[in-house]
Length: 60
Image 1 (cartoon, rainbow, N blue to C red):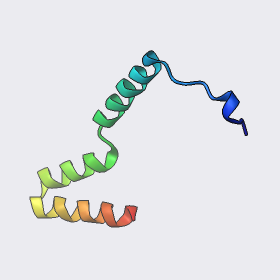
Image 2: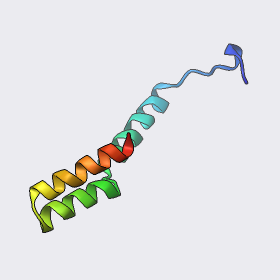
Image 3: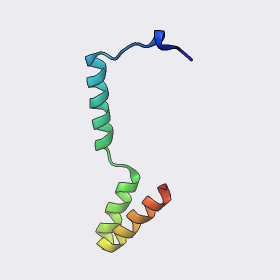
């Protein structure tokens, strides 16, 4: 494991690239989002809510 002497600070370019990449990844919906949207659209909003609660409880 490297000590503090091996620490290299991030440049402004590195920070901006990281922020842009994180925003792009956050904008891409996951499969769980697609499942909730499909269930809500094909069945009803209550079913979409139940799927959402199942996903949340499964993640805990």
